[in-house]
Image 1: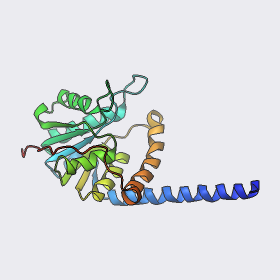
Image 2: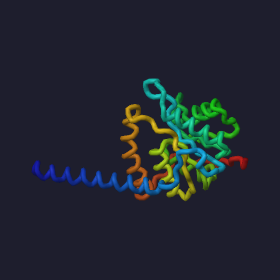
Image 3: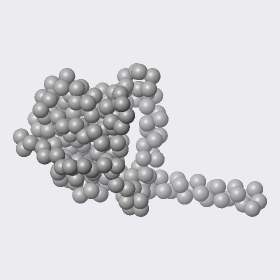
Length: 215
């Protein structure tokens, strides 16, 4: 194959990738439309909120503002009486790294009673967190708590799993603090759509059911 033909092939492939990314973006955004809230007073009350995990600190040891703002949003939701119980779902796959425990401790420090917080230690990906909310924790209706871009993808996954979900948006982080995160989200949305409609990806673990209290 000539260099010219290789160039054409690369151009076509790039165009197809861009088209796929655009289509996935539109699907995720349209699915979440009308189901996200920025003001706590506007959020319809639910029994359970799923707080999606991230690292407490950045790789350099600095503050992870995604974590800080998610905790603030979750505490605000509880203090407004919008939810009764939290599932804090995150990664705990290696020693010394424990997102659920970090979130639980931060919520307790923010005034949420410890008995209202349940840890999901197998929320390795957003897909795992959402699927396990239904399959392990038995929830068909939830409020998802994370930043807006993350909530959009979580709501898309929730719909695919038959969960009636809404989301409360934590405050966004300035792009100069998290440029790589926002770029990765483009590819994460493509992966989410492929996981649901082509790959039929399952969570890494399910495990025995966990019964949450009614009040």
